[in-house]
Length: 326
Ligand code: UT7
Image 1 (cartoon, rainbow, N blue to C red):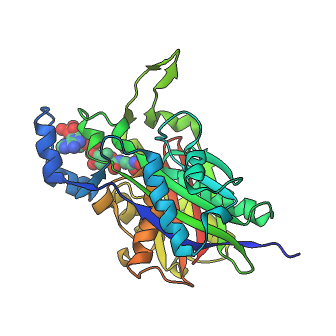
Image 2 (image 1 turned 120 degrees about the vertical axis):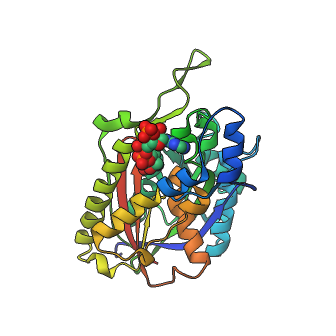
């Protein structure tokens, strides 16, 4: 038997109901004596709005909606899935994993299910892992989800972080097939630089211990992100023996429009070939890449046969890229 390839056969996404514009957020923060402005947020990040989950809506709810949409797009039944991976840093509980909860809700009985925690690189990690499992022949139909409710781990008194993030989920179905699919992928981390982006809190003796909020050295993250996005892109392109000009769409983690622009420039790609959703979604961490992929597929930009470069970067410090043919 020949080695199977892995191919994306469906995408889906889910956003909370409430879109919060910069203007609305600025008013809400002013009521807490936190001073910011639409001008600052747009100029420094490109973000114009983000979606925030209502009380009672969890990561699993967004993950399930995105998963069902991806399964419908692929035209496959939930009970035919044999692998469920959820990338998240904001699970609703310690365990069972979000993936097990989604698997139960979908009725994907017997499918392997686990979460991947690699912060904003989580979805790219999940896709790399699933590709490997399909290629060795142990799984044939995978459901991969990035889902987050970062609004729950933000310090709403810290203007340097609370304006940046949003909630949401994106999903893909990845299936074994005779044509590639995923052309190359690589995951990386540098734990020694972990302190520039953290949520240091933990559960201890039945209570939250330590700082439960996201803390970031924005400038350090910015600089490292631009560097590793370039090196990681060049690495997977070299593995596939392709040049940057042969990519149809660059879909990097959506953290900041200035990071996206700097990465594209370093690769010599025109801005028109970068999918940008950070303006509408804010930074949704592990959800941002599959959300952006689904938006671009739904609006007709991403089409079958095109080459797409997906890139994650974030806490850990982690990064990675997946080069695929749709
Ligand atoms: O998803 C994981 C990956 N995360 C990222 O990639 C984020 C990477 N970092 C960034 O995107 C940027 O560093 C930020 C958007 C976080 C910050 O932009 P910056 O251009 O690096 O600004 P800064 O942190 O140097 O702050 C500049 C000024 C400061 O005032 P002073 O010290 O110059 O007087 C801040 O206090 O802007 C001030 N500032 C704000 N002002 C208004 C910081 N946050 C705000 C705010 N509103 N929300």
